[in-house]
Image 1 (spheres, rainbow, N blue to C red):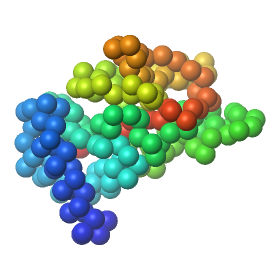
Image 2: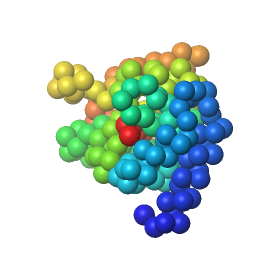
Image 3: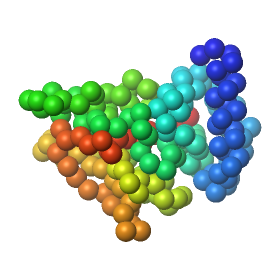
Length: 179
């Protein structure tokens, strides 16, 4: 990342951080900045999250490290129309999507939100009211061909299942990054 891009990304992250203090009331920007300055890989991952429409922000400062998550109102537009993982993509005989959520997350240096993280995010606001997001799926569900996704409808948060090989224009994934 070029120095100018680095500074621009930090400015975007700081503005978002300052404008959404309810997401991280106990976290100070100087602590965030210190962690990011010490971890260039995390900054590159946040850049990828931002570039794909994720609007990353800190949502948890209590656990070891800080948890960044996509806080865009809907699942990031640059990460939609993906099946769950490579095995699911390869199992499709026709109309294969351009990629999978797990492969794209790995290339970005991030993980998919898990179910607890998805509920924690939804406690901070209303997300995925028109879209849905793949979430990290337990191996026992994936072994049977399924994968989990979440959304918010009718004022409630739902976590549900679908075949891992399915993909929809309105389903993507929300990234999580512990720094």
